[in-house]
Length: 95
Image 1 (tube, rainbow, N blue to C red):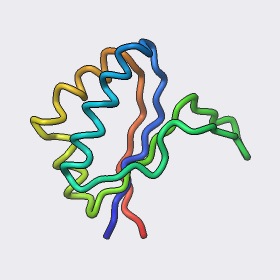
Image 2 (cartoon, rainbow, N blue to C red):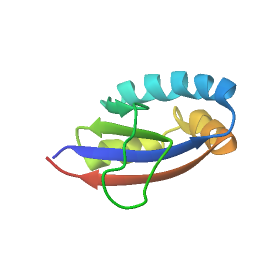
Image 3 (cartoon, helix red, strand yellow):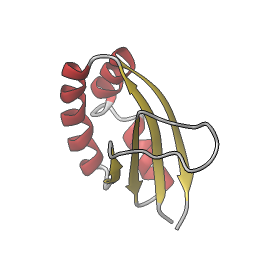
Image 4 (tube, rainbow, N blue to C red):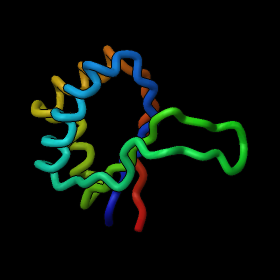
């Protein structure tokens, strides 16, 4: 069953965020993931949730997503993201 890493990101350092995007892209691909949404325009239809940047990555399974998130390959990117942005991230299974 596919699984999705859904992330709300508030970027504090746009220059270094470009470095993060390169790391995340290559590692996501290595673990079988693909971007479905990556920073497009966000419009709030109901409620007060209004993320400035929103990302959805599809993985073949939740296990593959967890393997990516905890991998040595992604560790430098995760560290960089945590230094230059505030994030909320969830993993959800779905069809």
